[in-house]
Length: 504
Image 1: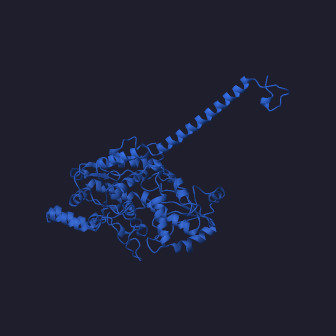
Image 2: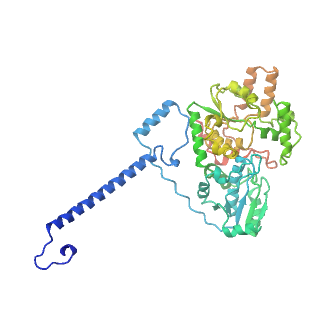
Image 3: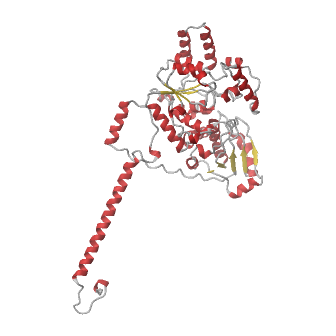
């Protein structure tokens, strides 16, 4: 029988609820309060453990900085500090507000060349899209060059970060909207290569009218299409923002890069040698110093096999004397010794397979026994997903190059230039820019016996004393843009005040 008073109904006369029902009600109330208190305590524990966990190894990737080479004493001090006082949780930065503008059309781009050539081109295309008030479609990467890499943009770069981090400057889409895609499918768009080294007025006067007319413009070549100099400051700084902030590699590439850097740092300081002595580089340049007649013939056949390599008949001797050849491993070994690079230092080779293999590397490995590369530091399973993807392998070398104690490129290709500029942006990290023309002259004198070793070493040091990646003004040659300093090698508009960098 249910007590009417307990149901809110007034009982007639002196009818009362049994004491057992009241006791049961009190017991239920206590049980409910116990459950509520337990729930609150459990949630509090979960929140606390999450906060602590975020500062440990299982925390979000964004909280983990890049490894740096420290002494054992410094590492121990850091560990002790962390145990005493856990790192604060860093909240994810809010997205920048979207830029509102009247869209003039859509810009599609097909990049050409290797990874760093495409990287610089992507920065330029963002700037052009921003200036013209158009929507940029995520760039298409080159799949038809010598490397034949099938990687898409999202296989190398964090595409979501690229889109969201630039939303206050330009609208970026993964693909064209369905209605616009249909127009492109029907051929209702315009495709063309823009003129190289153009200033921004060219894009306003020549390119913008085409976008307004066709609604979709496809730029089918993007390398070196924007001038190095004479551009507004905001454009130059946006190029830097894209390059050093928006273009992040995928988490898979970044995490593997961290592993390699940690492995190197455990054994002390390391030098990254960008040794451009791969088969394709030698075939393209026609440089055959130290090659056998059979190898020279093989390189010549390769050069003729690729129609887009315009120069076919090349005098290797003359080209080397003019400083236009990548240095050989033998020449590099002499230069590093002359610069007093310690014999025990780790030398990380940032390059593909060296042409001539162990025979050509013998001089370098004899002088520097600690020569390593990603393939010797990592297991084959670690690089399994990177095989036959040269741009992804180059991205890994790029990350290691940025964090090295010294970076030495043996040829001024796109990677050498872009890494040089990035290291300048990071605080003028030591980058030895080799004077190849003078080096081959001195090497020939030394090997012929007309120059003693102490004279050779002294001259090498003197020549490179002011070629270490320090602050310098970018040279501008208005009538010969190909010969002037490359913006991405020295983005001076984005660098810290060199007067404030006396301790570096």
